Image (cartoon, rainbow, N blue to C red):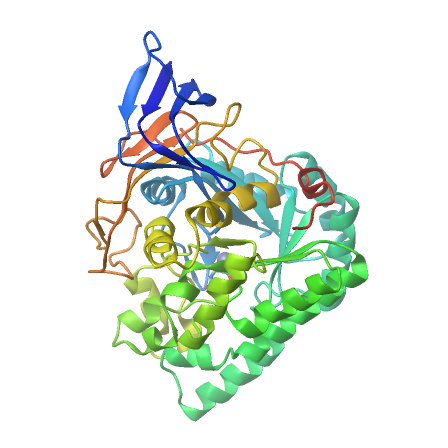
Length: 464
Ligand code: URP
Ligand code: ZN
Ligand code: ZN
């Protein structure tokens, strides 16, 4: 089945062009002035921008964490993704069983299969070390799981030790993988949390005050130094503050293949949100925590100048009763924010409209750079031969954030009541309309597993 999207403006990372998009089945066939094509369905996009489907490389669906499980599964979470113009996610499979990685990956594959509305893949989070783990790493790369993740925080839960971290970097490098790092010093956080609770400081804001910026910067510096030692690429996830970003910049200046992302919460929320009255404050508990707003100009510039390569959401939703597990003790509040639907409208309003980044840079940091970083060569651009993953974005149709317009499976919206100028009208994933004018059009299972290519093949030595 052919489709023509007519009358829009195509925005890719490198250029903006007026033109139509011809789709055949799942693939873009041509971009430009397209005449009549017999039997083709025509989608009118006059006045709209056509963006490559966004990719969210940092999500946590159906993840057991903090004594509970994230509120979105692969069905609900990818509906919210599509409503926000996202056509592919890379979620985290956690190593939950001893004896290697394969059984944990199989478990996560089973959760997503037949459920997702947009395409999906996984990073493998390594939380244990046994020889089976190291043996499985190349097998996972062969299966398209070309990135790994380690935690230098969450002591006694997910944290690994430095010696294991170095070995993972070495093994990953050998097999063409990429290691991602949650960079906070879990040992120091543990001490600061114990001290705070001992003083009776139990409110949500203490989550942030016991994870200060230097604790993130130290772990980031360590991760970059370890990568330098192993001569391996490293990607620092959810960089929250200037001090941490500066460690990546310093590493890149020394020639380390160090990369980093930030997340929308670090641009559009800050530590004062944790002081909101219950239950709102707990909704903003995530790690690394929300920072002083004085960091935000630097983070925008880091995205603009390419010091940080991309922005994701770290979507890790918990509803109020789950957040209430920590009503009397901030350390028991499950960490994570509900955000997957909101990257595009927020980035458009405060990035593009307010002149912080160009439309093309928005496309790069939300899609194109992510496709390259994580080995998805058919994603991240609207051009002939690419997957027909397209967002029709109407810059003149306002969007109001609310639980009514949210597809995320929580009973609140963090930006409730806020109105922005533009909205996602439709989202096509591989040529199929998944989201259109407020409604989901697909059945669970439209989304397919994405076999990603290894980092070294995708990058070919390009570290920009
Ligand atoms: O608070 C967060 N970020 N929750 C998700 C798990 C993680 O650390 O990425
Ligand atoms: Zn993390
Ligand atoms: Zn995360």
